[in-house]
Length: 276
Image 1 (cartoon, rainbow, N blue to C red):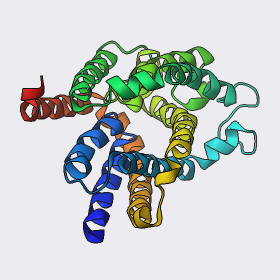
Image 2 (cartoon, rainbow, N blue to C red; image 1 turned 60 degrees about the vertical axis):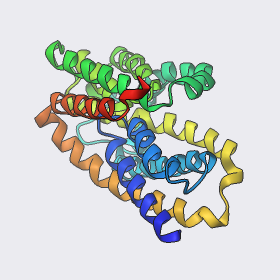
Image 3 (spheres, rainbow, N blue to C red; image 1 turned 180 degrees about the vertical axis):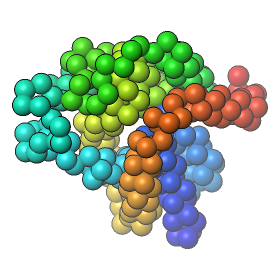
């Protein structure tokens, strides 16, 4: 039992670490893998499974902090990035404006989203819709006016924040929505990706904190090895994937990720055809 739970934690931690920051939807993949490894196997109940998802997400949050610590300190005025001007540069204002739209909608519709959108079928639809948005972004992207975070305007930050609202639909992908929006609005692929990761921090931390409070009773000694394994795994994998993705996205763009989403959606449609 313990050996199997550790194996499942490793698998789920790897899935979270790889997919959290790539535009393929970590939530969607976690729902699918969760159905395969947790719900169907009966290893743990739904409450423990939901608590575990919070734990592995915290591992990804820590990875962002480790990779982008200089930028985070810069936002609060404790560090000056190389080439950063004295006046206009990326600031806390950009972060707040970018986070507010999805934050408000998330609070207002949290219960409805939990009840109606967390299923394999809705994830399939979101995978397809997100892939279409990525193709649109690449085909009709604007002239690049923000080659770095310090060139990103408040208007672009707000626009990306509005695009981030799509990510409330599990399977759509927060990074996929925000990166696509950023490209359409004139940000480079790397700039849009970096801003997407930074915007993820307060949203993920807020959602994780609320989930921890709601599910605290399920953090018992018998599931601690399961939780700790998932946390460490997701942190290490996310740490490696963030650096890799930031170097990759400027070269391959979004089209390969869109194709991947369509392939995954097609496979899932075949597997779950009877539920449609």
